[in-house]
Image 1 (tube, rainbow, N blue to C red):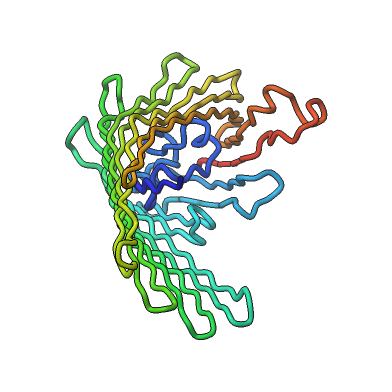
Image 2: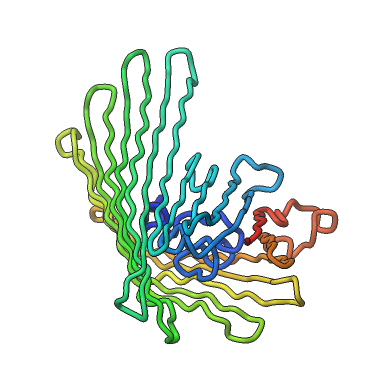
Length: 341
């Protein structure tokens, strides 16, 4: 079952976990503070960070990795990324008080002599802080457009997606120092087929929750969040009579994510995290409950302003390295190196 859950993060806040620390600590950047990765959930804090980073998600390959830099100049913050969040380029800007991220991607290829395919995607996210709902709150809005065209012997198939999102995160001094966290999104998906028929689907999503991101001891940091979510998808268009798909509905009750970081010495941090979701799904007369759970492990290596983060496969903890356990267990399968100015 493929779920959309388009909440934000430059059009999908919790969907992309491209950094090892984020992967281990639950995969939801809305729960991060004092980490540059939170700016993709809330662009208003772009000006709080100056860094250069590179990340690879698969050992032995950099094709799915990304590079980014944000620096200050004349009181403003400027940044650019390459290959982040499935966009070839992102441009980041903040004059202070607010921030914005413009995302762009264009691909064109010809898989055969008679077929040409093009993919154009553009996204814009904007954020600021507002003085309500808590001590203060991070507010973000996003919009995106993605169009794919396939030309086959002068016939054309095209799909388009219009994406909208918004998110609010309150900061307080209570136990849930990130509360409330409210996010909503919409995805309008259209398909124009070779026979000039048109079908459409509309997905609406919403979730509500809170989190805690604080040190619980001198060398121990806890990150945890709990959310309840709802998503609904409806279909329309040029279907044959009686063949329009039934509406679909997902309810998360609840989703819990988080992890713990333990400093070991002056330069090493060990991380362990988990994500758990219980979900109700309904389409037509069919319905079901499902639940899932996953764990992740990782390390962070710190030397002054230089940080290297990596994931550790669970198999490595059980079986040891390849030379001992005899299996390829993906030690440091996801790796990121960051220098903070």
